[in-house]
Amino acid sequence: MKVTIVGPGTVGMVLAYTLMLRRVAREIVLVGRNRTKAEGEALDLMHAQAFLQVPVRVRAGEIEDAEGSEVVVICASVPTPEGITDRNVLARGNYKLMAGLLPGIARVAPEAKLVMVSNPVDALTWQALALTGFPPERVMGTGTLVDSIRFRELLSEMLSVHPDDLRAYILGEHGEHQFPAMSVAQAGGERIDDTPERRVLCERAKGFGIEVFRKKGNTCYAIGLAAAYVVESILMNERRTMPLSVRIDGYLGVSGVCLSVPVVVGKNGVERCLKPELNEEEKNAFLAAAEAVKKVIGEIG
Ligand SMILES: NC(=O)c1ccc[n+]([C@@H]2O[C@H](COP(=O)([O-])OP(=O)(O)OC[C@H]3O[C@@H](n4cnc5c(N)ncnc54)[C@H](O)[C@@H]3O)[C@@H](O)[C@H]2O)c1
Image (cartoon, rainbow, N blue to C red; front, side, top):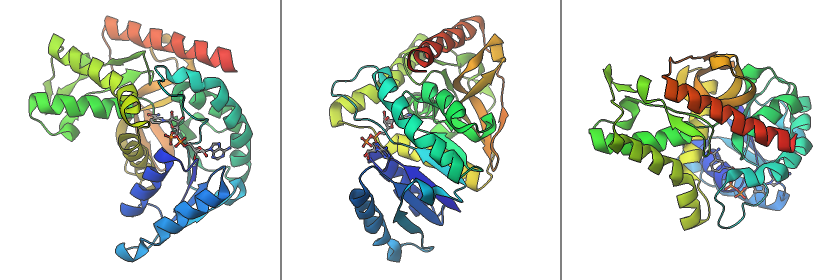
C-alpha cells in the first residue's frame, strides 16, 4: 500500500509519521520542493524502523515517483502569512501551485484517490477535480473533519461522553461559513440539544485553527491525524463516516462547488454522500457556505 505525500512540511510530516506508526502504509513517498530536505525527513523516519513491528519504506521522490500510489495527499502550500485571519489569502498562490502539480499526479497515478489538505481546502478541492479530471468519488478535501473533531472534543468535556461516541458534525466551509448540524447531533441515540452554551463551543471550535496558528505558527497534530484517518479508511476499506469536502451535486439545491457533508470513505474513496435532513437555519448556512466558496473559486479560476 503506497501513499505519496506532496508537501512534506509541518502537516505532511505529522501525517507521514502517523501513517508509519499506525502501520497503515507499506511505502511512503515524500515529494517536496526542496529535495534535500525531503531526503532528510525520509532518512529520519527510516531510522525509526527498528521500533516498528512492520517496517515501512519511506523515501523522497519526484512527482513521477507517485506512480502506483493508492492515495496521494496534497499538503503543499505557499507560506502562510503571519497573523493570518482568513485562509482564502492562500487561494491564488496555492491554486497556481496546484496547477503545476496536479496534472502530473493525474498522469502518473491515474487510479489514485486524492486527498486535499492545503487551504483554502474547499476551493482547492473543486479545482483539483478540474486539474486531474478524476471522478468526484476519488477527490476529497479534509474540509470540516478537523473542525468537527475540535467541536467534539469540547462537547465531550461538557457532556462527559467520549468524543468518538458523539455524532456531531460541523458542515459547510472549512472557514468562516462552517456551521454545526445540531438538528441531527446525537449520542447513543439521544439528541444533543442545541443550547446557547453549545453554540459557544461551536464558535470556539471555529476559531481554534487560527488561534493555534497565532500561538505556535502552524497547526499540525489534529489535521495530521485527521488526514491519516481519511487515508486509513481508504486503505483499510473501513467505510467510516466523516465530514469531508466533496463535490456537491444537488444536495439542498446546491451544485458546482465542494463543501463538507458526511460521507462514507472506503477503498473507492467517497463510497457514499449522506444527506442529513437539516433544519431551515442549517440549510441557509449551507447555502451561504456554497456562495462563499463559489466566490473564491470564481476569483482564482
Ligand atoms: N485543511 C485543514 O484543515 C488544514 C489544517 C492545517 C493546515 N492546512 C493547510 O495545509 C497546508 C500545509 O500546511 P503546513 O503547516 O504543513 O505548511 P508548511 O509551509 O510547513 O508546508 C508546506 C510544504 O509545501 C512544500 N511545497 C511548496 N511548493 C511545493 C511544490 N511545488 N512541490 C512540493 N512541495 C511544495 C513546502 O516546501 C513545504 O514543505 C497549508 O496550506 C495550510 O493552510 C490545512
